Amino acid sequence: MQANPPAACGFIPSDCAQGNCIIGAMTRFTNVLLNSKCAPSTATTQAVEFLVHFLGDITQPLHNCKRDVGGNSDTVTFNGASTNFHHIHDTDIPAAYAVEKGYGATDIQGVAGYLDSKYSTNIAAYTSPVYIDIHTTDSYGNLVATIAMANDGNALDCSKSAFWTLYDQDPNQDFGGAYYDAVSLNVLYDGLFITGTPFAVLRRRIS
Image 1: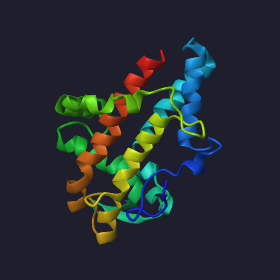
Image 2: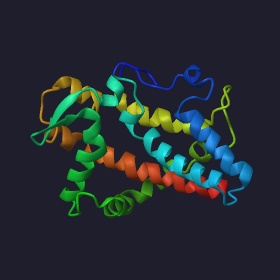
Image 3: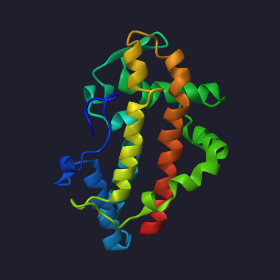
């Protein structure tokens, strides 16, 4: 992906010409399942485990960004505690959102259910052919579905109302305040709902 959001975002196909990136890895593990027809084995179990993990990564903007090691090198404050810009999106914002909605800080299933009930009308947007095409590849042999997911997640890195744009406006702010109010729904919606929906459909298509 581009290394300088919010000025530029997007996947550079030549960066994964040898398949040595998350897009290439997801392509390989999808093919493991397709070729085995999901027959039980150590290889298919590992393929499913890696696909679940990588699908979560590829739809999280800061997991899908070269700038400052995805924000890991940027020290910030969240509700008075010192942490880093990447960590607040993985842990602090989801935990605060869960508590805000009446769930425990680590009740991921509860929050996922809440988001599903609230936004399930958008499922069609994430089960379209572009996301669940498990055969079409680009000129380097990488699945166009995973490229589309990567581009959509990375696009948020260049959003004018979230992530790096807001970070650059005031890196010294307490990110548990106005920043949390601005991005918390995007973080949870993209991280849980958008991730889970295409994976569930992909799993059905592969099997």
